[in-house]
Amino acid sequence: MINVVGISFKKNGRIYYFDPNGYKLKKNITVIVKTEQGLKFGKVVEPSLMIAEDKIKTPLKKIIRISSRDDYNNHRKNLKDAAFALKKCRELVKKVDMNMNIISAEYTFDRDKLIFYFLADNRVDFRQLARDLAAIYRVRIELRQVGPRDKAKEIGGYGMCGQKLCCARFLKELDTVSISMAKNQNIALNPNKINGLCGRLLCCLKYENEGYEKCRDKMPKIGDTVETKEGIGKVIELDILNQKYKVILEDDRLVEVQYESN
Image (cartoon, rainbow, N blue to C red; front, side, top):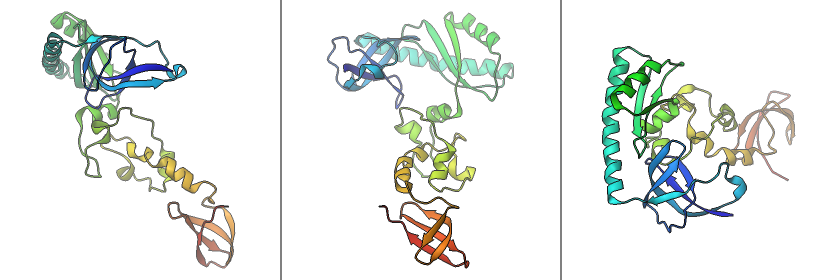
């Protein structure tokens, strides 16, 4: 087991783990770290955590230092300048009518790189755009295509439940959600019911999926032939949470059966 510290670079953003490098860090302390993209300004969200070494996929990078007042001021300047760069990039895209939607921009802390995130239905040739941006800002330009779920996380909004989107409110990782989860919970496969604002399957389908799997474990499946007290019939409907199922008998009678696990 090794001691790590969890750092986030955006509000409700993904958590990345670093070697504390001897620093005793408390929650919400801001730090400077080195990432694959360069230096970044981040906030401590998990001050101390023991993780098995085999769960660390890449060599841990170390915390460089606890941020100073000057670091904080530079970070604020980077945020402000990135907002202006985002506006300029959108103007350039609109001018040449490129089929892409620029959703955010960020400077690395040392301003060695300016990164733009965009959404597009297909692959986009943005080489000329990158050259134009590099000529304006005199830094390395990187354009990264993201998915609809990333856009929803960035922009926010309200789901059909009336709450703020989970991805924008508290989800750190956008886990894979499959249509089998909706089927497992007996939810009608209506896109209006199972898709979120991003147009992808609702993240919340995953929340209760494990509970449904346990509840339906060993229960008969729809279409199975079963024997009941009333006779033999075929299962046509499941009530997973109440552990009941409906059976149509050979004489066309419909009966409800309470499942009893052995």
